[in-house]
Length: 145
Length: 111
Image 1 (cartoon, one colour):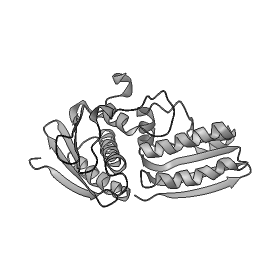
Image 2 (image 1 turned 180 degrees about the vertical axis):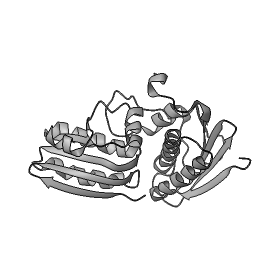
Image 3 (image 1 turned 90 degrees about the vertical axis):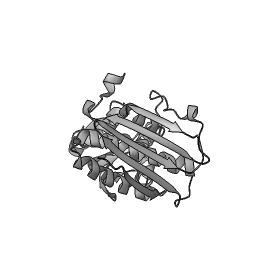
Image 4 (image 1 turned 45 degrees about the vertical axis):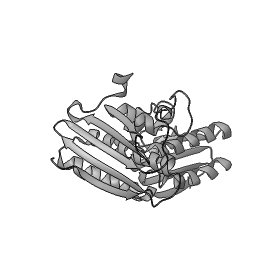
């Protein structure tokens, strides 16, 4: 895929289904196995949900820009927002032993993706980059423990 | 995909059948449906997830909240018929063993 696929959605939860559908089609067209596709879609959905919750904190008409690239073995997604910047060292998953609602999105991204990085070196917002090597396929939770 | 909820009361048990995706836009609807069930005399509350192909962290959080309500109210809170996609998310969250999970809603209601 020489050109990245770019999609911009408003910061409204009702558009999360749209971004999942587009990504599903893209991954299908590259013959990405269903199990892997499902997990990549989860990561992108969680990243966008985090932008809605933590960067824009409410308004539903702010832009969330997603860029998908599949090059060789790498699936790369970048999520750009123009909202509040978080301190990168404070973005971390909660302890899973502590049974409480919420805080799992970051855990999913870290667990599933090979690389997750945040860049706030810009005037506004954050650029999140996530990369997954497709040929490695599923990484079981047991393998990462 | 939009989400639908259906409730079936049978004696002192109630089954909540969810169809569609449970994500940030729909999990509140599930939460609003589950909450009052713990205030009534429902001995067993079953959430049938056979029609759910996608769940995100907000959906999982809603079910964790249901589990906590059940601990406080002594109602049994059970999940039934997890699809492979939903089961996978529970596994990544390492929450599968925390819930009472059944293959079918019938089993969840009987046992």
